[in-house]
Amino acid sequence: MTRLSGAAHIEPAKAVSAVKTILVFLDKEAPSDAVQELVQAIPGADAALSEAKAEQDDDAGFAGFGAMAAYHALTAVGLSGSEVQIVTKELLAHAREKVGEETTGRIVGAIPGLEAFI
Figure 1 (spheres, rainbow, N blue to C red):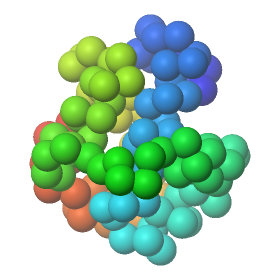
Figure 2 (tube, rainbow, N blue to C red):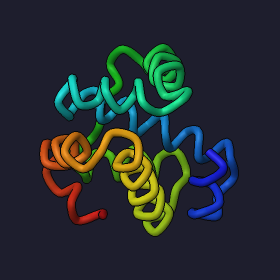
Figure 3 (cartoon, one colour):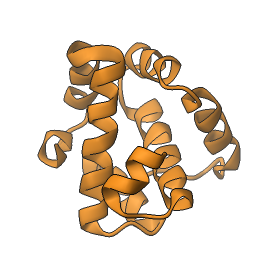
Figure 4 (spheres, one colour):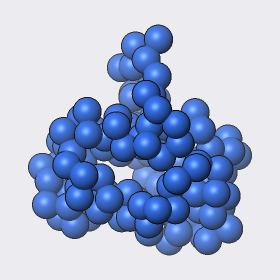
């Protein structure tokens, strides 16, 4: 979280909320095997995803389509448009470091519009 909050110049709590939001979104929208590989490769991601799912209302969803749905969810947790872009870029860069270009590419390719944020 330090890397993410430092890059986006946001409080650590806001970075945690952003990561949880992104993980839940990816869990719903991206290939499950690729997301599972990513979650297993990032320390604490599995617990964060489980916690985020438990916190989420059963009927809660992402308003919109593709990357815009995630964008709206991230702004709802308090990120500005530029912070959303920085957080997304940093998280995907970290994903590439942990699981490689192929798995990260499968995740990005599954979400319409996500490539515009990276």
